[in-house]
Length: 309
Image 1: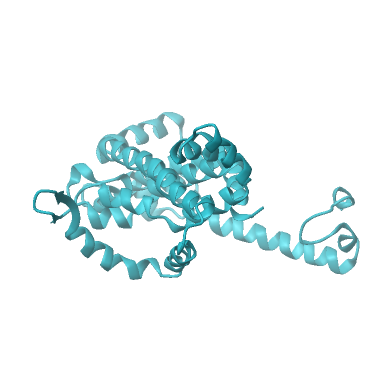
Image 2: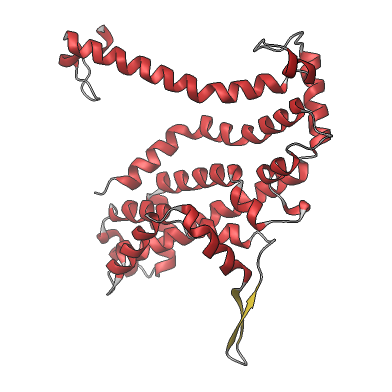
């Protein structure tokens, strides 16, 4: 407890930690967190260990660790699984979808947040209230209306006849990109981050001849780069791990993302269990690396967007 003698912030103060009740509460919370870590990490650890077992070991052995594990055997299993699953195309598809999602998740919610924060037009409060209201709707409730709207989506406008042509955008990536663009949470993050920028800076930029687009790209986004970083990295991670939306929207095998393709491979006779688990490991590596390397910046970005002033 000596390291907490000068503790100033947190659930328990340094004075509370010196009491018997405070120490008891501290160790209770400590073991509770350890238990939560074990519950969270064990499925991923079991998946990785199962990927390096043979099919016979999976169904006959009671050992958690793989038997007769060697580096050469592990490399051979990785290469065999990659060749058998053929995830290269789906990985590229997922990378492309995730990259575009990250861009539109910054542009569209960012511009909307800028308009709500700095352009005090009439009715802007009602619009922001509707945006917040959409966050209260369960995601499952939105699935059917969104799917129906994508079957007959008003995309093409005929100026000569002044009519809108409805097209079926299923089996394309457009619905996935539209979903990333219409993200209420990101809009609120940008709006709160922009609220902290003094209006005097915007007035000075307008006096210098900047229009609203230049103010947004050259002033607002650089000043709120922590929020921009959080939104971009978070969108990349979520898009890479998204299974349900690509599975519902995409039907052609060449367009499937990695999570959707892995689901289609589940239970096939020619795919052994250890090979399938290795495919899950392949799919988990990119989001895990994103979180490991950018954890601190993501935390700073969400704190900046969550606190006003």
